Length: 242
Image (cartoon, rainbow, N blue to C red; front, side):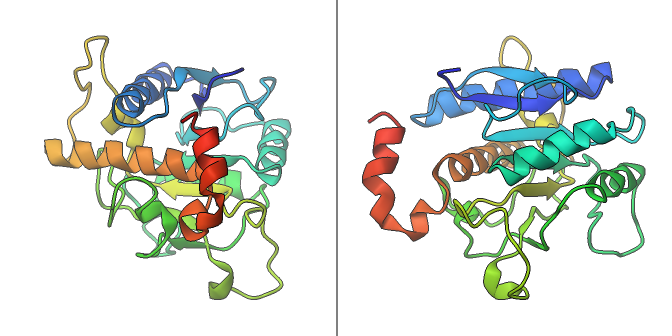
């Protein structure tokens, strides 16, 4: 695999999987048009058998009606995250399943069942000065089809107890991202590049910011915290093929 591919977890639910594929196709086209990154076609992953380490980030749309992943599948995701990979969990329902407000959705509850079997670091909403807010575009929020959910990431070291171990310390990249904003739903396009689903509320500016959110996430995945450590710029440029 010479090329970067955006990857998603195949849930077995045809419509969810179609939107994931078309969503990552839409983001791939946007990345190719707006950045130096030109990903190859998106890849759907079967967690029970596909090699995960090829992919810098895996998009996982959560569906309460899809089969619960097997223990073996969750163990493979856990190993992938420990080895430096990142999983973007999307409950696609705008609810914040982490703030314990009691308003947990069915998808949020399914996410919690999955996370219960993973080694998850402490989480926090993306801070306003985090590298994710400036890895390519300047962003203050991370909308998808919806705009009401924060984007959760691994809490920074200075915001947590010193004994909490971190999978992110190697490259400064959070091993987990969580949203409820349905990124793939905002990114999804048909073969002519026409959006498949309206944003809620209908707003093309929101869709543009959803794409920008996807770009920032990908740049953060591929470059880590280089924005906070300019020493790595030569290596970064080499990596981006300039």
